[in-house]
Structure formats: structure tokens, C-alpha cells
Image (cartoon, rainbow, N blue to C red):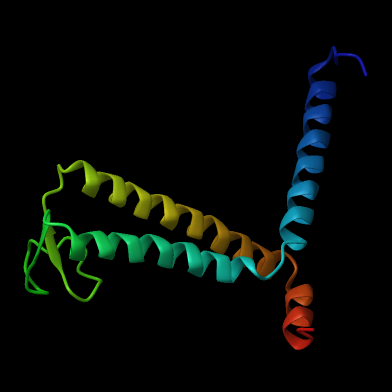
Length: 129
């Protein structure tokens, strides 16, 4: 396997490598257990629970009305206005974002598996044992 000297040979080698990578990625996603959906929910809940725990526990956050403009995360019941420059708040907020990102990746794997290998997913749901 020497270095291709012509442009069309180089493009052919590149396309073969991209096709091999695509096949490997498809196999990885297709063989992913459907458990990744529950892992996505678990990671999302972990980030939300710790973030809400910090808001409710520490003195950096104070309860405000649900429709108040100071309510940063209005999707949660029980809104809080927090001092966002505190180190503890920044740490928990970044942990919340990290957990949300991991949950998004796991959920994307599940959606990818449903798109790529729907017959496998249907069989797994029809025969769970």
C-alpha cells in the first residue's frame, strides 16, 4: 500500500476509508443495546436533581415566583434566583450541562439505532427476554 501518485487514486483510497468508517459506525450503533434510552434518562435526571438540590439547599439561591423574570430555569417547578458568580453554582451548572450532553449522546445513539436498524429494535421490543 504505497502512497497514491494520482489524484483519482487518492480520492479512491479516501472514499474506501470513509466507507469502511461508515460501516463501522453503523455496526456500532446497530449493536448498541436499547438500554441506552434508559441511560439517557438517568443521566438527564442526575444533572437536574443535583442542580435542583443546590438551588434548594444553598444560600446562593432564593425562591422567586414561577413567572418572575429572575427565574432562570422556568421549566422546573419551584423557581430560584441564584447568584450566578458563586463557584458552587458554576460547578453544579456545568455538571448539569455535562449530564445533559451525555444524555443527548445516549439518546442520539438510540434514535440512530431506530433509524438504522428498525427491524432489530422491533424484534427487541416484541421479544424482550
